[in-house]
Image (tube, rainbow, N blue to C red; front, side, top):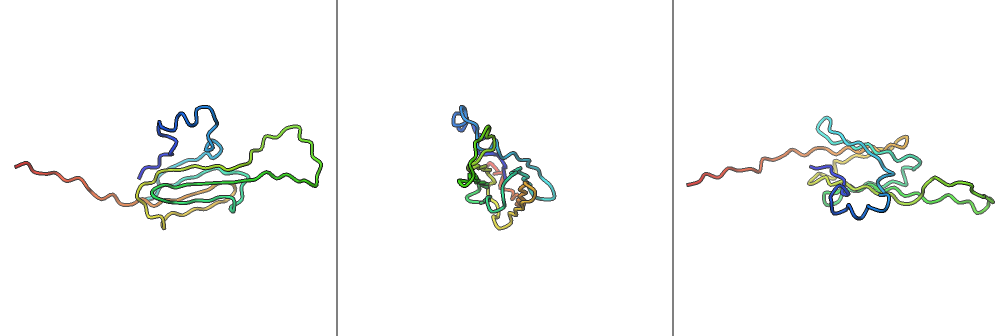
Length: 130
């Protein structure tokens, strides 16, 4: 299993060259402990309902979407707007994992995902030369 962000590869370099990548708003730590991989991602200001975690074809995709809270009833004249809204997405390649074993928890703006490690099966075989 490889927990490598998809944008790590050189092919994506030019896609993100001039723009700020979406994942810059979703910082994370990845570590290994007790037979599992753990991902802890900061997603402050979001509700649990705004976040989606999916595991498909070896990829773990985390999406968070927040729409602008514009009140038409109030007459607001903004001096400065720094809070960002929109859709944010991070994707990691997990390889062949049991998607049913992946667990996610969201509390206090931190998303914690646990991915159980699959036992590696020895696939290397030495062939005797005759």
